Length: 129
Image (cartoon, rainbow, N blue to C red; front, side):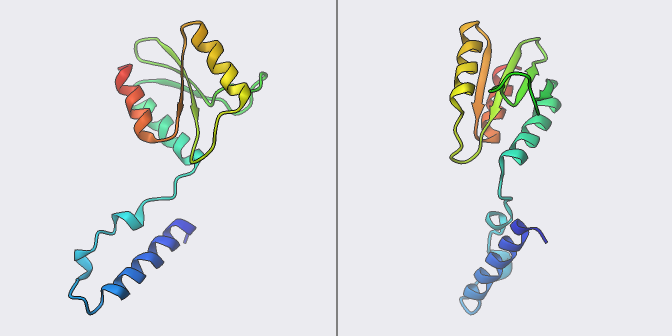
């Protein structure tokens, strides 16, 4: 059992213990909050890639580059726009070199985004669909 499922299971067990005798039934408790996965940057990146590809985007995930500070994803929208996306999670921030690269892209009227949630990816897809 992975850590996320273990935490969700134990948390939901504790809620049931507290609910016992209170008149609440198991079906009265919303377990969605307990089964949400603990997101990580790599999981967010994988979800973003999948969503972009489903929307018809061509996506290249940059694992290693000859130039430091290259953003995580280089994409082409269905309409032919090239877009660079940096995926961050939690309190992670872009590096000074990534900020520099974003500025260089934008200086040339390129599109560069830093996203922290899958909802931000959805907005980008909608904006360029």
